[in-house]
Length: 327
Figure 1 (cartoon, rainbow, N blue to C red):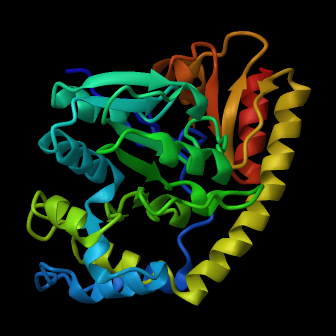
Figure 2: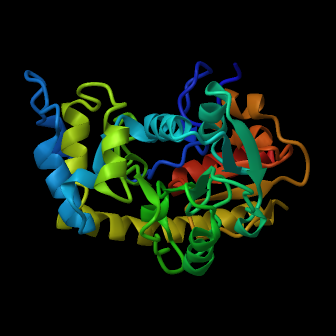
C-alpha cells in the first residue's frame, strides 16, 4: 500500500529552514507550553477524558457526549472512515488536491474513492463519506459558509459530511466559515500551536448517538498526558490571545515572503492561510536546497508537478531561501 506523503521531519539531511510544514513557526504559546511540560506522566489519564470533554464541550456549546478525543487528525480520519464503512457506506469523496490521508484511509478499507476539485463538483448518487478541508490544504483556499451550507443540504440521506478545520485557527484573511450542524468537525490545534509532535486532536460529532459509535472504535487512553494538557488549554483566553497576535505577525511575514518570491519570478496562488502553492519560473532542485538545510514541500504528490507548497517562516529563514534560490 502506498503511504501518504507529508512535509516536516523525514530521514534526509537536517532541516534548518522547514518551509514544508504548515505548523505555526511562532509556537508554542508560553502558558500552554508550561502546562504541557507539567503534565503528569506518572499516572494513566482518565480513560473517559471526562474533564477534558466537558471543557471542550463548553467551548463549542455542545454536550460532552459529542466530544471525541483522538490521537491526532490522522487517527480521527482513520476512525471516521471506519465508522462510514460500518454504516454501509462504500464511497468516499476527497478533495483534489488534498491531504493524502483521506484517500489512504478509504483505500485501506477498500472503499471507492472519488476525487473532487470544488464543492460544486460534489454530486453523490447515494450515501457517502465526504471530506472537506476548510481552509484547504495545500492551497490555503476557502469554500466559505454559503457553499458548505448548500452542500450539507443536498447530500443524500445517510451521508457523513466531515469538515477538517485544522487550518481554521491560522486563517489570515476573510471571515471564519460556519460549520453546519449535520457535520462532523475535526479540530487539530497542534498545527496552530506549533506543537505537531503532540498527537492529540478531537472530533465534534453531530449527535451523542453518532459519537457513541465512533467512541467504541477508539483505543484505550487514545491520547497521553501531554496531549490532554494541550487540548485542555487550547481554548484558554491566554492561548487565543497569543494566537491572535501570531496571526498578525504571520500576515506581515507572508506578505514579505510573497514579494520576495514574486521578485524571483515565482507564480503564486491566492491563499487565506500562511501557506500557499507556488511555482518557480524554472525547475528547482529540492536535493540542492536540502544541502543548504532548506526543505520545500514538493506538490507532485498532490497531483501538481512543478509546484511547491510553501509555508511562512521568519525573516532569517526567508533570507536563506532567497539566497539559495538566487544561486
